[in-house]
Length: 86
Image (cartoon, rainbow, N blue to C red; front, side, top):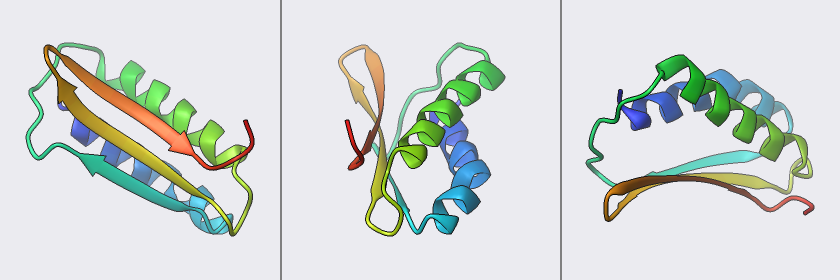
């Protein structure tokens, strides 16, 4: 599966919620990431949950949520950061 595709689809799914709260979604990724083995739907659900929580706990009109995907040695690292409380 393509992790970048999963992240992009997750962002599209949750973009309206972010827009309503005036929260900017920022996606940063290595240009090329290898495909991984996994369950597309389950990984997408995890990414959606992380994004949803980040948006939920970020103050409206003042926040941003950054999603990063990059390769580190033999791993693909995906992180979700927000500037909300906690």
